[in-house]
Length: 370
Image (cartoon, rainbow, N blue to C red; front, side):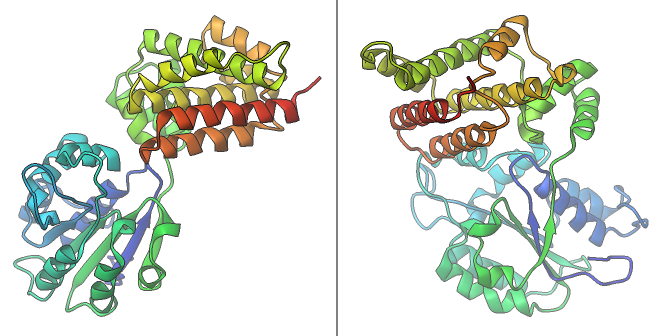
C-alpha cells in the first residue's frame, strides 16, 4: 500500500467496526493516490483532481453500496440509481454514517439491501474502460459483506487481475461475513476506533465541548466516532433511561429472587414502555445500560476519578455493585450488544426485551456477591 514507492495493492479490504472512519479513510487514500501534487504525507487539496474528489465528482471514482427498491425505484435497483443520495449523505456527514442511516436515506423501509449482479455488471463495464483523466480508476465498494454470492462470482477474476491501474477498495464492518473468495484476493487493512484521548480531542475541537463533557461522551459512546459526533446530551432522556434501567434490573431481580409470586403484568408493562420508544431510542437505552455496566466496573476497580455520572446514578451504582461486577460484566456486555443487534435486525422488541430480563435474572442468580 506504499504509494511513494509505486507499490499499491490493487485490491484492499478496509476492516473497521461501526464508528471507525473507514469510508473517510478510503476516500482520503484514493484522493492521495490521484493527487497531482501530493507530498510524502498528504494530498495537496487544491489540484483539479483533489477538488473533484472532494465533490465526489471525479469521473474515475466509482461507488457501489447496498441498495433495494423504494417508492421511486420499483424494479431492478442498482447503486447508480442512488448516486445523488449517496453524494448527499457522504457530504453532509463527512463520510460518517451507519448502514441503517443509509437505509433511511434511500427510504427502503424494511427491505433487505444488497450489492447485486447489476452492480457488478456495471462495475465490470467501467473497469474495462481506460481512465478518463486520473492515474488510477478507483472503485469503492462499501459494505462488501452485502455482496450477493452470484454477484461475487462475476467479480472475482477482475478483482484478482484488473486491467491497468485500477484500485479496488472494499469496506466492511464484519470480516466473518465477507466471502472467503473475496478475502483471499484482497490485502487487509484494519482500522481501529479512536482512542479515548483522540476522540476527546476531536469532540473538543469539532463540538466545542469542555474536557469533562468530551470524556463523558467518548466513554458513553464506547469510542464510536459516529455515535459520539451525533450525541446530544438530553438530561431528560438520560433520566428516563436511568429510571427504565432501574425498573428493568428490579424486575430481573424479582424474577430471580421472588419473595412472592412474580407479577408478570409489571414485566409486560415495562417491556411495552420500551417497545413504545421506537427502535433508535431502544438502542439508546441499551447503550445507556452498557455504559452503566462499564461504570460499575470502574467502581469495582476503585477508578472513581473516571466516573462522569450524576449523584443519583452513583447511588444506583453502589446499590448494584453486588450484582454487576468484574466477574459478570462481560456477560452483560454480550447480552446488551446482542439485544442491539436484534433490534437493528427488526426482531420483535417485546421478544428481545422480555428475553433480556430473563437472561439478566439468570446472571443475577449465578453471579451475586453475598
